[in-house]
Amino acid sequence: MGSIPVPSKQFSSLPESSCGYFLQELKMIWDEVGQEQHERQKILVELEQECLEIYKRKVDRANASRSLLHQLLAESEAELTHLMLSLGERSLPGRPDKMKGSLKERLDSIAPALEEMQLRKEERVNQFRQIQMQIHKIRTEIAGELDIDISPLDVTLNENDLSLNKLEEYQVELQKLQKNKNERLSRVEGFVAAIRKLSEILGMDSTNIILEIHPSLDVSCGGKLSNISNAILAELNCTVESLEGEKIKRLEKIQRLGKALEDLWNLMETDYEDRKMFSHVSDLRPISAAEISKPGSLAYYIIDQAEAEVEKLDQLKASKMKELFLKKQTELVDICVRTHMEMPPQSELDKITDLINSGEINHDDLLKNMDEQIIRAKDEAFRRKPIMEKVEKWMLSCDEERWLEEYARDENRYSVSRGSHKNLKRAERARVIVSKIPGLVDLLVAMTKSWEEESKKVFLYDQVPLLAILEEYNLIKQEKEDEKQKQREEKKRMQLRAAVAQENLFANRPATSSSRRLSNVSINGGFGSCSTPLNRRLSVGFHQQGSNSINSASKDFSFVKEDNKAIGR
Image (cartoon, rainbow, N blue to C red; front, side, top):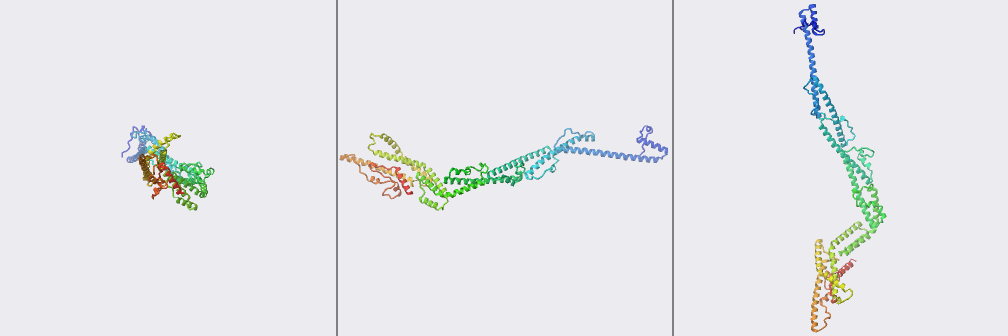
């Protein structure tokens, strides 16, 4: 290492605080002292070495400061970039160019952007925490955890993703949870309202029922519903279903009691004033469970009162049961007689009467059985109605036929007398009606056969098959026509004999064996020589000359009817 050169010309111009000045002064001192050259060289080398150390330390410090600035700048850039990525910011307006200016200038220029992004992050973090706290709170409410206090520190936050998209996802989730919460609150409120309404109808204390489910559900003191868990909803639903079932069960019981009361009232012929006391019970009979809303209408005390009234009336029912049975029996017999149907056997009716007297029969079952028989009888009468209408028409036609025959035998029918013109008109109408009898009989036969095929049984008229009656009528009709033909032939023979013998043309004709045979026949008595039951019940007689015609069907049917009444008695 060489000595430090100090120009002599510049010594006078060097400042007193500079290294060259002090070195020149040291050299002057050495010259004055007479310092040896190698000593001088050694001291200069030491000075130079110390200067190098000082420069080196300064350079190291400068390098460290520069590295620190680079690091700070890199960290700032990285933090800014991380903040932008975490916040989802693609670019920041006013962000400086990192390639321009010194390190300190670049660091100073990035500081405002970094501070702004940190403020944004803090604001975004607060938004995330608030949303997540609300989400967490709603989830705990749905889970039924009401006693847990939530603080912002309890919320775990992923600060690497604070973008608006993520915030929007949380907001969407929060909206869904809020909607779910609102729906659950509505369901809870609906269940609570239903419990209160059902409790009022059933006469129960709704507050105790609600408190048994959960104390937080009682909002009568100004509280707010907060428990919306699945367990609470399930328990509320179960309670409502239980109350609905109890409501239906009580309604069915009251309706049964109401029906029993009405039946007993009708049986006992209870006054309106006595019925009015339990009108609220009988009024519930046609009402469904959904239509009942009056408070206390299904309370236990109402059921107890109705049961007591039914029990009281039931004790009085037995005395009038026989009277009611006889009334229904009379109604059934009237239906059968009026429609000419087969009546229940008298022995069976007498047996039921004996059972009623002995008290060995269930009155309710007996009335039900009688009502069923009456209903069946009415239904049978309705199905027989078309045929019975034709039968009545046929009977009326037979009456007209009998009248026309009697009118035809009247020798004074053409005489001028009072009312003769009316008889002429009636005769014209009767001829039209009589001409339709064969077709009517054929129609009756076809309708009866069709009815029997459909019903799988015989059509009885006063316990006699209608087809047999019609067949007997056709046979008697044919016999009558044959008899008329014989009479006409006999009349011709008599006229011939009178012409030959010159006898009176108006003498009475002798009765034939056939007319004598039929003269004593009636539907109710039958043929004297016949042994079959049908002929004994259905045969029709004829009269000779003045009364030689078929008896009317209505008269024949009245005989059968009277006979059946006699059998019934």
